[in-house]
Length: 443
Image 1 (cartoon, rainbow, N blue to C red):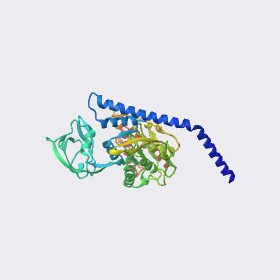
Image 2: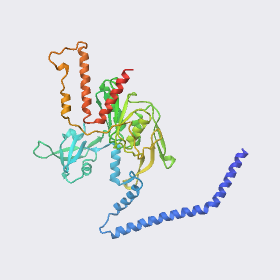
Image 3: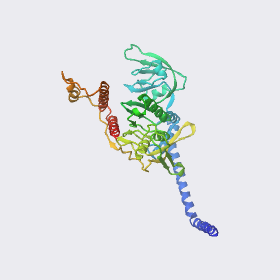
Image 4: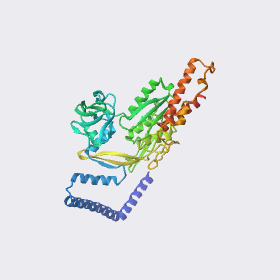
């Protein structure tokens, strides 16, 4: 005990002498750094005043300061930026996945707002808005000349508030008005469907709704398919998914893993570092899983793909992902504004960073342009077989039920083959799952 105490005392004395020897230069260095910072702030104030007083046109001082702040943040990396109150509110709406609105997906065509489709069970659908409609006015204000973002903002608003949109519809002589009461709209970030015997899970973004949409969608489709025994495998489509909430990426990864690390984040300070692990439970019951990625798969999408790849839980198919391996923290500021600041890098379970590298697929499959049927394909589809010949012998080795089963299987194969012309990457994934199923059924 005395030795320990002595060692501690000796260490303290040594520390004292080091401090005594180096205090002067350290203080001088800190003072110089502080002085330089204040001098630069004075320089900023000087430039701001020159612009405010001497620029050829009168400037908006608030916008000028915001532009300077944004310039400061964007000089750090492409993902750090300043958001004014309106942009900050819009960002929160986007990540939440729900907002007060009409419930329509829109695009812009020849300067006009065109309805792609009304979302099921929303005010727009119930009011009779149809795909292909053009919205020419919102509450009497023409949409021609508006950007698509501006038009969308005019249609969003408080839940329960009325809005009048003017519609031009093909086959209708005159424009007409539709009065709609805004309601809470929930964006479906995950959609699940059945392709043959395979469940395809399309995840378009990672909002607060993503995991719940995915889980409930899988449960519904598996039930419709007749149970998990009737499902050959699963495809998770993350193509062109720009990312979103880190927590949702963790939950989606966890949905297919029983244990092990999902992702770790490391910041400059230890408080910005974290590690997330999977919990028991796989919503696919361990069925074969394929993940589709491409150059538009970024951030949260890459966390999911990287985790499933490192755990050998899924085969990754497609092309290299975007390569955004950083984590941004949203920080609210005064007057409703905020900043998005890069605070950490993330790492896959094997400890690799995908920053600027992306996730490389296990099988590289380029997407092919949609293919039109040529003369050779048409000839192949119209090919004649033995069974088409007049007077050919019948097959007496199969029952009528077995023949019907073969015919049904052939139709599924033809449908899968047709998909190659429109979505080659997805078709490749389905073919691979089919092959794995054939192999496993022979064991």
